[in-house]
Structure formats: C-alpha cells, structure tokens
Image (cartoon, rainbow, N blue to C red; front, side, top):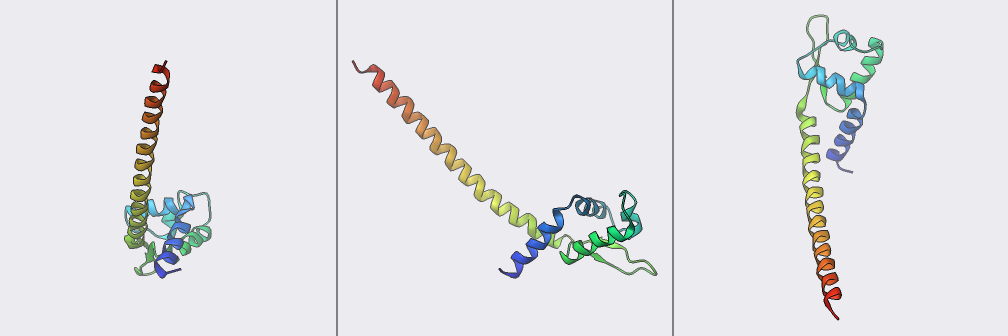
Length: 122
C-alpha cells in the first residue's frame, strides 16, 4: 500500500461518519472553535473533539492558535485528492457502462434480426 492510498483510506474513513461530514460542511464556511462546532450536535465538546482528532489525522482540518482558543480550519488538499480519485474511477466505470450498453444493444439487434429471419422462412 502506498502512502497516497493510506492517506485516502484515512480520508474515506473520516468521511464515513455523518457528524464529521457535518463538521466539514460547517468549516467550509470558515474557521470555528470546538464549542462552536459542538453547538448543533447533541453531544459533548469532548465527543466533538474526538471527531476533530480523526479529521486532523486525515489532514482534512488543522487547528490554529488565536490567543487562548484553537480554531479549526478546513484543509481542502486531501479532499481534492479524494475527489480526483473518485473522478478517475467514475470515468472508468462510466466507460465500462457505456461499452456494456453498446454490447447489449448489439445483442438485442442480433436477436431481433435473427428472430425476423426465422419467422420469414417457410
């Protein structure tokens, strides 16, 4: 496993949780403290901090220092890498789907043509 694959694994694991996705959506609007991030959730700041640690390990967020607080900031680089990976694989599967559609259409045409020949023969 390469480092990139391992980083992608961390990103996808972090994104698998709806709370972490909601936190990232909030951070897309700008930096926020743990308290601000915890407000919309029915969980403690400590529980939110655990989610933030996972996001930090996946390098999806970073924490800056501003006086006594440590606001969280979205780091889009690994999100971009995950998006690129998904895009590449989407193109591969779309191409395979298009080829399958063409193959099935050709088979259907053969069956219609073959069936018409069989019924027209005396």
